[in-house]
Image 1 (cartoon, rainbow, N blue to C red):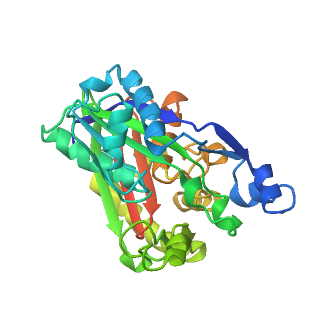
Image 2: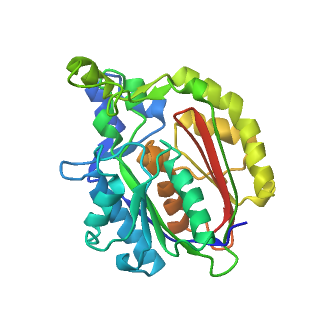
Length: 329
């Protein structure tokens, strides 16, 4: 166990609310088609000027207020996004500046594991806090999925929303702790979810058209779901074993809000009673790496998760990867 506590949580909700009925009209689908297939009533898209770093700073300020801390009291800032605001510098440097800390010298860096970025950062920085390297760490995931959605693929595009979620971590002040974490990656599924442009593989001066086409998100939903369904049961068993808990010990499960089908599968697989799986998909959509911290914030702010509760944060991401953390909140 690691004597580390989540001191505060926060969320930023972008300004543009997009109902599923608006997407029905965009794609010339029958009324109710998007809501029926996606399980989403509405999601939010970032307006012009709402950058990844601006949204991250908004969520961070809320988390800092909940932790009763000032931004200047942070020892480290970690951005845990699937897609950076720009290639260089790291998004954390831009978030630091948005928080008014541009001349502070507070270390800031990114940790990326696509939709599992928040969990990877939570695990890494909890170890750093337990080792005494840092005392107060901001971990924030901010995503503008709408920037790369393919307009000609409604089955994929209808699932996603923009937003940001943040937590402030610190040494435990009581019984709160990280009981265990576990991650697995299966690179054979690397092509199931991808954005091919933005790195060094596709180069605009070699083939601009290919570069532009590669800038859109691509997902093979059928193969992604099949591989996840096959691997998930054994993964969850190993996670719970590592944390020394049973499913009955866990009060709430905070999942990545991948899709209505994925959430229903998880509920059925674990035979969960109503309410044990926290869901915000219907009003947020799939927010990629921001999905888990946003769902956690919703659970905390609504009272579904209280101090002393044992909870599990679980998800999957491109790679194909699985990740989970069991903690006492």
